[in-house]
Length: 348
Length: 241
Image 1: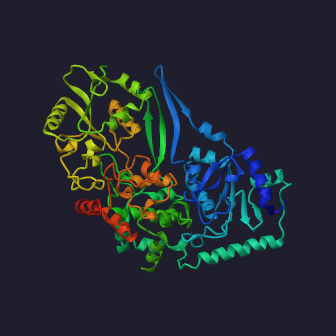
Image 2: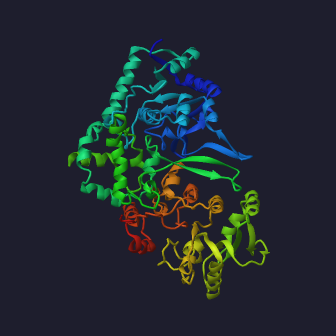
Image 3: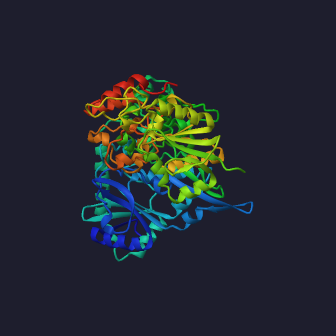
């Protein structure tokens, strides 16, 4: 099988219809001018022409913000558990239109959540989901993936990777799963020409050049600079501006800290255990028994997230955990810019 | 085991928070089965009792008579819960004095502020259920945790956290003076989600950074309301260690 095939945009709509018959499809949709990922039921809802990134990253479809892990019932002195994993396992989903930066973020999450300790809920969702990526034709002002080694090319982590070539898509096959999809729909695909493959390379080079117009250091190699400047003055400045709202954590494709609590019924005879997203910017994040909060000062919380991206990730999984999507910059009401922070640290 | 005795009381208020409790419909019946409701004017319940396990009080204290009543409730109750913004902060919607420990709405012209005090000005409050009105599920959670003897904790985040999960566009970016960044969350960001700015009905977030919000307003050309300057004097940039 060829590694590259092409599909016209018209035929892509047909493919979408077929996918909708076989998978639960998650794709970019547009509402009031904003792009976000959502379950879709009609090809007409899907918007594959969007610029930059979706507002929220794909992680919520693998690691939802609120997730019931199991329910329980007490009957005759015995506790019966019903693991929600059973429901997660069966699903067959296709995630469409994810950017290379977000594909990379899923690979990072895999290392953490299916690494030394395995999160079965996350793993089951990953197993059951086909990843169909979409490279960027036009980055937005917040994109900096070229400096984090996570775009605009994608080197893996996808089943299929599409590139918009105007009236058709060039599709790179990245896995057996992806190849199966192509084989099952051979009437829609044809082999790509060398020119078409070159066209993609030119396109990605142009996108990379556009992203590289901002001057940033190679963010995969800022470990030492960060390590040296842990007590630098600039962290106080960021701490003064930070609202501790946690939006940066929620929109970050690689932030995955969570809290777990129990929700019993009124008579105590049944209940559920729930997992929710947490944020290292909340005071409650480091509150321990007795009430002590370890990171009570805001600069220490701002640092926690940024250091986790550029240093602790390297220690823990061997690579930085920032994919350069720029979402945290876009949503920060206080205008804290992680790129700028990294650049300043390197220049100290 | 004897069921815990519960009383529900109203100070000056619109009783909207109590209506939120009654709106729990199917759940309220179940709730009432696990306790003995001995006093609730709105439901027409008035049994004779001496001690209460849980007193739930909504509304702000606006008269000496209410103050006396509140002190009496406190004396006979093991646990006292302040229900809703009026009870927790004195109630923005009673046009209360701005220089108080809460985030008020803009006072309509010509209205003078008058006495409208939060319960904890007079008595010890064990638990606060925030919001105008309160969120029924929030109340339900408190109720369950009290029955189990657990400690109820309000949401640890501010309004922005839930707002961004709703895929909302930030109102600040549209030049709207939203108070979400300094306001305690747990409401599901219901106002910003419907395009209305947060007016801070759940009170200041635990680590509210008023200094930064003023800077944000100024940078975006949003006029900084008087009460934010007042708040700045009280809390400034929030917690320092």
